[in-house]
Amino acid sequence: MKLWGGRFTKETDALVNQFNASLPFDRRFYKQDIQGSIAHVTMLAKQHILTDEDRDVIIEGLNAILEDLNSGALQFDDGAEDIHSFVEAQLIERIGEPGKRLHTGRSRNDQVALDMKLYTRDEIDGMFILLKDLLTAILDIMEKNTETFMPGFTHLQKAQPVTLAHHMGAYFEMFKRDCLRLKDIRKRMNFCPLGSGALAGTTYPLDREYTAQLLGFDGPTLNSMDGVSDRDYLIEFLSAMSTIMMHLSRFSEEIIIWNSNEYRFIDLDDDYSTGSSIMTQKKNPDIAELVRGKTGRVYGALMGLLTTMKGLPLAYNKDMQEDKELYFDALDTTKGCITLFTGMLKTMRFNKPAMEASAKNGFTNATDAADYLVGKGVPFRDAHGVVGALVLFCEQKGISLDEMTLEEYKAISPVFEEDIYEAISLKTCVEKRMTIGAPGPEMMKKVIEKEQEELLALKIQ
Ligand code: ARG
Image 1 (cartoon, helix red, strand yellow):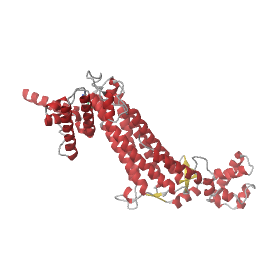
Image 2 (cartoon, rainbow, N blue to C red):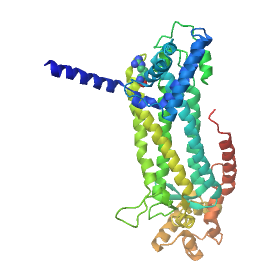
Image 3 (cartoon, rainbow, N blue to C red):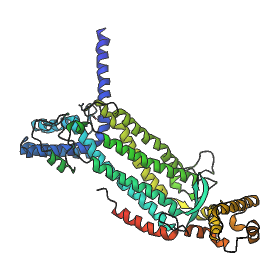
Image 4 (tube, protein in one colour):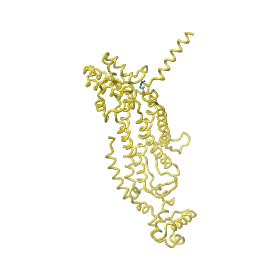
């Protein structure tokens, strides 16, 4: 009995350790952990809680660990519980006694809260740059296509003619808002939790303002219980990532439709499409489909963390360790999707004749034919009825409005004159839409100029 009993206990311990450990995933922020420790000891020495000599030895030791981790000379030892214990144990092993003073006036609770914030701040900055690259790519397409006509849709039915610049401009707005959201989150989260201790601060005379300043924060957090247990900024960031993915997914859906045999609005570069192992004719929009598919994963991470947090009493609870894996996965997924999507967009070719032909063949100018009649004094409701008759006629003959003869027009309403052709040409239909935000090329060019200025001025802080 003892034999297996002893064995059982041992195996259970190993399992518990494995279950409890976070090093396999929190090693990701080793740089931030070391950065935080350096600021902490700098402040401790300034407050005479630590001698200057100890501070210097500790910082030297921490920098050496950082270097060795960067170069790969030092490997993460899976025996350690988490990144905090790993770095501290390494430090003590390397410099002895002074290393044991590193954790003075600090708990792993405020330490992990700090590390996650530092790491997240860096990630927000990185994602902001990726989004700006995407915005630049979109704006580039806009500049070149203010007169590329295409149908605009409602209910996925051709509605009114627009231009490619206008269509792209809608996505520019979405990703611009995404950038602003990141900026907003960064500003709100930028307060330093270090010094909150385990939950109730510490009895040491820490200078929290100073630590906050050293680490580039706008100040210290003002409640130590909240300081160690706030994960709102992660939820906000996951929500912003979910919105970015939702935008990318809508865009991907359109690319998939435009790439279909029926539309042929675009040609994807070979680098961004794949073939079929059996059907040789296929050129599949896999990247767009994967972006659309991966959106679910990012939403999942958001729901996961919201659910993890919902029942937690103050202050720190180990449940919070679960804020990492799904979040990291969402980060990698979102960054990957923005990068690949931008590459796909930059190399995509637009089939302008197909877009224009499609805009012509769907009665996208029917509203303009009605407006023409209104211009000649016909009440709008009557004009709507007349154009309905025109559309029916064309559908029966399999032609478009501009292919009708003047006699055919006159047979339906004597109000029509020769100038109907100009009034319903794609060019006129689009050009006449010249209010702010509309596709008319003149206004579009002004909007593009404004977007260029905004993009240049768009900074994360
Ligand atoms: N690995 C832990 C986490 O990710 C660090 C904090 C541990 N604190 C504690 N009291 N066990 O949340």
